[in-house]
Image (cartoon, rainbow, N blue to C red; front, top):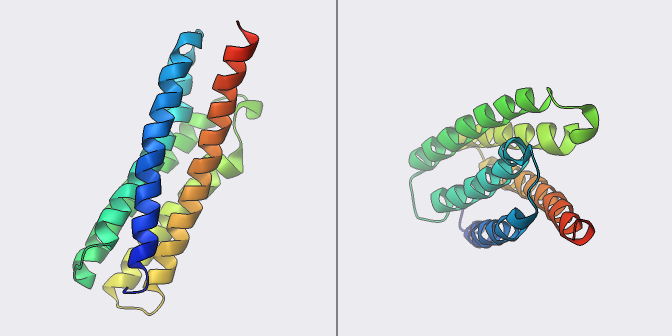
Length: 165
């Protein structure tokens, strides 16, 4: 784990910063809200905040000098909670029109990331050599999915302001 603490400090700091930025974008976009945006926020914006918050909490579990058992427990809780959230979100998103969602970015990558995090927790509990690498892979996948989703939301909000004025 000695070689990975910088990685988790960097991803945790990035996640914390991006939480603040996405909140600013949402606040600025509230001037251009349309009917039905409450549901869209719940289905498209809230997951971004959940993913970034998950990354921040993962960093808080991975950076301090904890025992492998404690680290495994923390990652397992985050992974199981995130997996339940991502699966529930996928069921909610399937009710929307197919052109409103992207299966890979909105459903598959978050589920894969949280499942990999649960796998990483088990690897930490078993003291497997690949535990740190599997956790890092889960973090990178979730970070990429959250960045992509936040970029798409930012583009939607920006286009509303420009075209609706």
